[in-house]
Image (tube, rainbow, N blue to C red; front, side, top):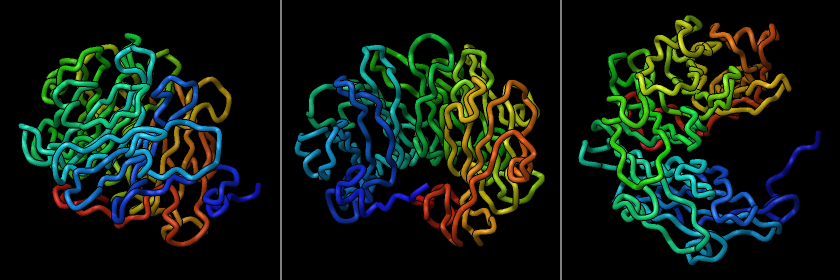
Length: 398
């Protein structure tokens, strides 16, 4: 298979480039499919720029789908040509640190969006974080997250506790409870549940047609969704979250939660990922129970320091067995390509709740396959950034 050179994409051969607006915006820090936001039949894109200008309020850009290969300038998107901009609410919110399609949360037929601002300061405390659900629109009018927080054009999801950094990762959860509306998952890796300091939490927020603010404290209490509590201290669960598709074939969307600092038997910071089966109830889920085979299954990292689970996603049905498969990134893994070349693991869907060991996947013992990085320090399967700081409160923005 021939490789793809991004220089060719930038030149308009085989795709197109999206150029950032201003110096040090860090546009592209997060990117995702946006679904069909404007209802024209083409899939749109969302690009996060969390460090926009000196205020670092952040911006996200929705780029409407197109058939041509002309470069897209985010300055044009900000001016309302070919998409629209989503402006951050407050200084140092770093909105756009994570972005995703939200599915159709309000059931109007247009794809909605979710934008994380993990350094935002709601009433619950500094760096509690906010996530904003932005309803799809056919216009190119700029959206201000302050308006979303006030209930115009979407709704805000306010973090539960100071320092938990909710919105560090955000994703559509699919339809977890089977009510026909798309649900959401919001990661808060700095949260301190019973599992311990920085064990992390993830919150599943059920879809709603209204614009009433959602308080993650209410979700944790079982109203409007459910909480997923981390297993061990300093696991940072919720640093990555995603819909897993229907892994076990029961008709409900499942979830995958990464905990890249978790310490399974394979070693310190080998990382774990947890597959949480969909549920119609709002009962809290404890990842310790998932690891024990109740309500899902755990995926244990291969080697110490791999930080598997730093990125997680649904892989679709790779092997054609009718079950959704998964992909787990381990950027600090050391395959034959060299130190920190990185590995990605494709894990086949299963109806059982047996633990999956990535060492078995790498050995070819069934259940999936491994994708080995090419060269030392490529950090394949993860962002090329320094390892996160021990304190989530000082970890911008790894």
